[in-house]
Structures are given as structure tokens and as C-alpha cells.
Length: 452
Image (cartoon, rainbow, N blue to C red; front, side, top):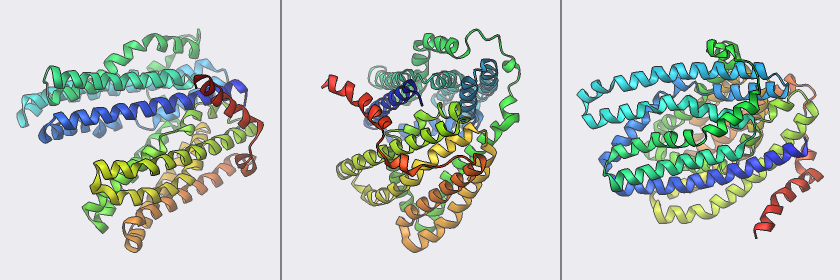
């Protein structure tokens, strides 16, 4: 891996961490603002209305974006800009078509909503519908920024979105007294503000990605990625969503609704810990460019595993240290969740490996294999969780989580060895401190020393 690529990855992790932490801080202020101003009824109304995008998320073809980004990165690495452009424009074509359809359904259904509820909620539906028109454009920005490793633009884009959302909700609630409607306006304001601000950067990224490549026929082939291996990425995403949502119902059946609340709180802590320093997410656009070079792939995978594991340890220590204070001060009713959260952290070990393995599978266009692996993942939840809950009660959730993730990770590694016989996981490289590590540490520490 070249020093320029290493530097890009290091900077990518730094920018991603900064934006993640800033956005979480802004999100806390946003949540406090809503809870301190809105009545319980108004807050419930906004939650119901904002659940619509989640319910209609299948119209955004979840899972296909990752496939498209991976395929584009591979073609960029092979210098086939025409094919990369075809993949991108084909994907954007189907997203625009589905976005217009979804917008129409929501916008023109407002009169029927008004008959069942009231004019205010109907207006919220109409305002919210525009998010489906903005969504394809936002996705286009993110894909090109990622493919070009422009993590600084990704970070600033997210920060601007969160600041815009907070600013609009403050104005709407405190100045114009719009009530629940202010929350819906804030939801789409993030796109209205951020997309024009970054339009010039998007155009520059377009030229950087495709150069003077002739106009692509991908716009006329919206189903290209779906007919190819892309559909398996979508199916895998649906299975993953289903698997995450079936756990609460199994827990409710065995332990009751109270246990579901404890699980949800612990899972929120766990997910926040796992996302604090997302090394694998930053490396995702690079993997397709080296997937044909086994030695470089092994080296990159070992580095990602090493630094993701270190990142998880740092994140876990941070959360384990400060969460007791936060829980005791603000959420004393969720003290039980802390113990479950601490046990769930053990699952970060197999997650360290499975994250990069999944990225390699996407680069190999082996999404069909991932789909069947996710079927086994789902079956493992259905079989293991009831047994674990029956024996260990609430803490059985952590046991099932660890077993399911470990079995999945081992299975992905064994399958990866069949797809790439020369691939090997070098524990020596993962555990050793090399010249590459010295370079990375120097790159990180030098700006800090200047700042201090």
C-alpha cells in the first residue's frame, strides 16, 4: 500500500471520527431541544410522521449503494472510467425514478390523511415527501466523495446537515412557534441547505471521477445493477434488517416488554461504541482497488483489523468509563442496560474481522454468497436466542450475539479462503509493530504536536 494511500486512509479515519463525534454532540442538543419544547402528544406525532421514511426505505434499495460504490471503485482502479460511469448513472437512474414515485405517493395522499387525522399532519406528509426527491442527489454526493476518498467533504457535508437541522428546529420552535411542523421542516432543511453548498465540490468530484468520459447510456438502463449481482446486496440488506427487528419480539416472548426496553438501550450504547472510530468504513472504497492483488489485499486487511480492534478498545474504555455517570444522572431507570452493554462489547472482537471480510466479498461481487450467509445468520438468531434467554435470562442476549457473530465471521473467512486460495490472515502482521505502524503514528501525532 503506497504512502499516499495510507495517508488518505489515516486522514479519512480522522475526518470521520471528528464528524461522528460532532454530529453526536449536535444530536444531543437537538434531542434536548425537542424534549424540552414539544408536548408528549406533539413529540409522538413527529415520531409517527418521521417513521414514514423508515417504512418506505425499501424504495431506496438498501444494500445496492454499497454494491455500486464497490463496483465503481474497482473499475476506477482498473482505469475503466466508462464502465464506472455506466454503473453510477444506472444506479442514479433507478433511484431518481423510485424517488419520484415515492414522493408522488406521499404528496398526493395528503388529502386522504387529512380526512383521517387533521390538516397539520397532512401538511407534514407533504413536506416530508420531498426528502425522497433529495435522497438520490444526496446519495450521488456520498458515492463520488467516497470513491475519491474525499472524506473531508463527507465529514463537512454531514456536519452542515446536522447544523442546518438544529438551526431550523430552533427557529421553528422558539421564533415562529410552528410546533411539530418545525421538526419536519428541519428534517428536509438539512438537504435544502447542504446540497447547494456542496454542489461545486460535487461537480469537481464528477470531473475527477469520470474525466472527459462520453455521456453514459446508464441513464437508460436503470435495472442494470439489479439484473447483475446488485439484487443480492438488496436481499442481504433486507435479511439483516429483519434479523435486527426479530430479536426484540423473541425477547418480549421470553422475558416481557421491560426486557425489550433494556435491550434497546444496551443495543443503542453498543452501536454508538462500534461507530465512534469506523476504520473499516473508511477502508471500504480502497479494498476493490487492491482485491486483485492478493498480497496487497492481505496487508490492507491485516492493517484494518489491527486498527479497528485498537479503535474498538479505545471506544469501549471511553464508554465504560462515562456511561455510568450519564445513566445515573439522566437515565436511572436503565441501570440494568449497562451490564448487558458491557457483555455485548465482547462481540466487537468477531465484528473486527467480519467487517473487512464483508467489504472484500462486496469487492469480489460475491453478494449472492453473503445473502445465503445472512440466511444462516438469521437462523442462528432464531435458534440460539431462545435457548440463551431460557438459561441465562437477560444476559443470554449477549451470549447469542457473540455466538452468532463468531459463527458468521468464521464462516466468512473459510468461504473467503475458497474464493481466494492465496488469501491468508497474518496474525503476525496484526500483532506486530512495523515500520508502517510507525509511519501511521507519526502521521497522526505530528499535527497534534504542532497544535499543542
